[in-house]
Length: 196
Image 1 (cartoon, rainbow, N blue to C red):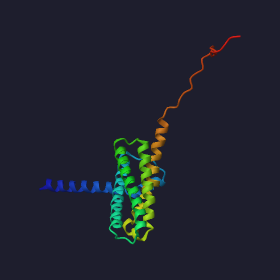
Image 2: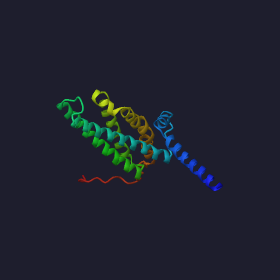
Image 3: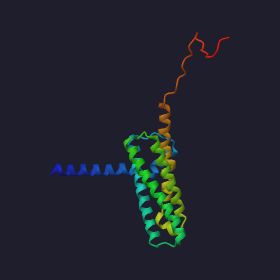
Image 4: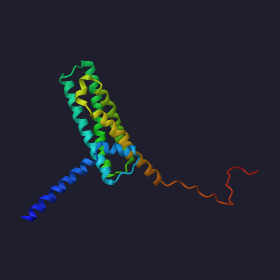
């Protein structure tokens, strides 16, 4: 009977510990880290940062699909020509979401890929810009909600300061500088041409 109680308590403790670790890496946690200018993230923090960005991209995709269906189904107060304009923007968002997902996959496999990090940052910034615009539209703001400002924060300062900048500076310090070849002494360069 004692071993059952010990097992139950240890199981409960491990569940609480894993939940508290997951809750530890919130938007607020990463914001504080970026403003304190402690840009060094542990491997676990980098992984969790990418997980959080992936969740934000998934939320963005859900909203993008919801807005597309609302416009196409005539559920919004948007006229036809204006609806066509917004559908083009939503298609651009789909491209940014897909690109972001590809770059996330690349960064999970190769965390030091600077190009993938920059492209993910660009996707997040583009999405943040569009979603802030949607948030200013009465027809769309209820669907977008807090995702627009969150996207902006995840892009910059968080991802930019905590992932892109440290990665770029670490690659810069690792890049060997080209050394000058020593000049050879005693030899004069040959000149081609006629002798007098």
